Amino acid sequence: MVKKIFLLFTCLYMALPEWVLAQTTDTEKQYTAFDMRHNGKIYVVVCVMLMILTGLILYLVRLDRKITKLEKENK
Amino acid sequence: MRKSWWKILCVCLLFYTVAGGLLFDMPAREILHETIRNMFFHVCMWFAMMILFTASVVYSVKYLRSQNLKHDIYAVNFAKTGILFALLGYATGAVWAKYTWTEYADDTQIFTEPKLTGAAVALLIYFAYLVLRGSLTDIDKKARIGAVYAIFAYAMLFPSIWILPRLMESLHPGKGGNPALNFRDSDDRIKMVFYPAIIGWTLLGVWITSLKIRFDLIKEKSLLNG
View: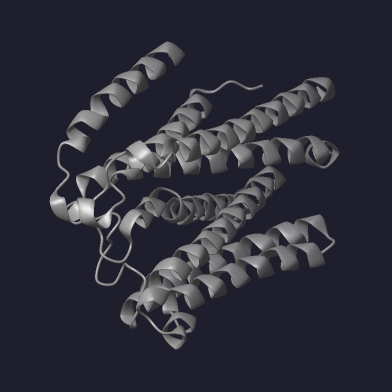
């Protein structure tokens, strides 16, 4: 189950950007920071946000474990 | 840890939301520019809130039908997480509005914005739900009055955040339809990230709620069994 979900997302992830990238027009380049993706260090922001998200999720997982332990002790 | 497929799905979707939401190309918007990406964060907070509040009202009705205190614990925790998401949505909306609306609308128009006022009213009604529950000491009375109030609070969400802002002049998108849910309206590139984002954030809310519920169930064990 886990493997299947993981595989599905990997496939989706790899298939996506190609045709998503393909439809950018000139107007869009005017209004959106088109170059930012390459020169503006936007990847740093993505990395920071992913780190925060990872931290929060790990915190939730720990909390989940602690509660499971409590549940077992209370049985 | 209680392992569930939806927790893994939640983590995958959220990582996809952050990475895809920031890196994929998005359609051009005159006022919003790159802030259109807030769709995957700000708007999703409200979607998650709405789903959590719906779960809360379902469990409130269940409680009234069964008088089972377990359902009351479910209802109140769903409402609490819903309030958390609403606060996050409100705060992020304030920042978003500050850097987009102020460029072409004057202050009075922003301060009298019906969507903001409506959301504030809806939030206050839900704060009152917690105050009401906190003020009652008898457990059964607290659960029953809380459940009845929760149904009214949920009913008030619709005029205050869905109907009234659409009838009035509003800066907020959403006049004359459902821009986020209209399949012909929004751009494919937004939808690619937007729908997974809604599911991801909602699942995160459900995860947090499930932890709170399990904690409360341990805490109230003697009450539930006795």
